[in-house]
Amino acid sequence: MILPIYTYDAPVLREQAKPVSSMNEEIVALIADMFETMKAARGIGLAANQVGKLHAVCLVDLSEMDEEDRHKPLVLINPEVVDSWGEDVVMEEGCLSLPELREDVRRPEFIAVRFKDARFEEQQIEAGGLLARVIQHEIDHLNGIYFTDYLTGFKKTIVRSQLNKIKKGEVETDYPVMVNGEIIPA
Ligand code: ZN
Image (cartoon, rainbow, N blue to C red):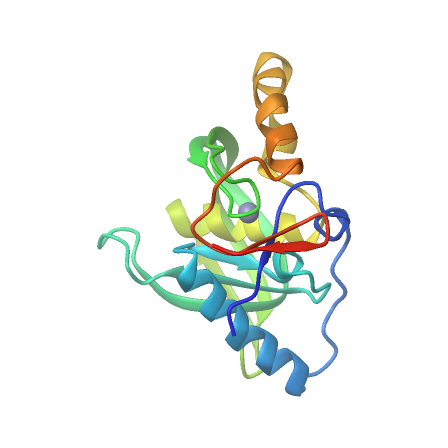
């Protein structure tokens, strides 16, 4: 089932997702719906907060990317960045919850992330490049953080008007969104 994506400034996007204690039907269904929702919106990552659920679950799908960035789809349950290294790198980010906004964000280049996979088995992987970037972005969502929170000064001022437009539902998306408790179809 394709779920509407909550956009700025939905309260659920500022909340901390709760750790998943065991696999159950609700989580299995949530993961399936999130994959369908992410694909329909042509996203490469999605966190449960973005579909209004406060479970610590996020997805990353780089399977359609060019070879250097390509990676099999990942389900990350209770993910945690346990280490980061390398120089911070700047990369442009966008977000399905922040339609039409793209800005440069500085983040560590490499991370080690621990999580439970779709079978609820413990995993730890090292990631760099786009994969590290998307994982960090999605884990931020689970902690109530938007990429725009990292912007400072002039940049912050520039995005404020776009954030206000999103808040009022004055942006067009080709996927269903939830604005002020109301579903706006694609
Ligand atoms: Zn996002």
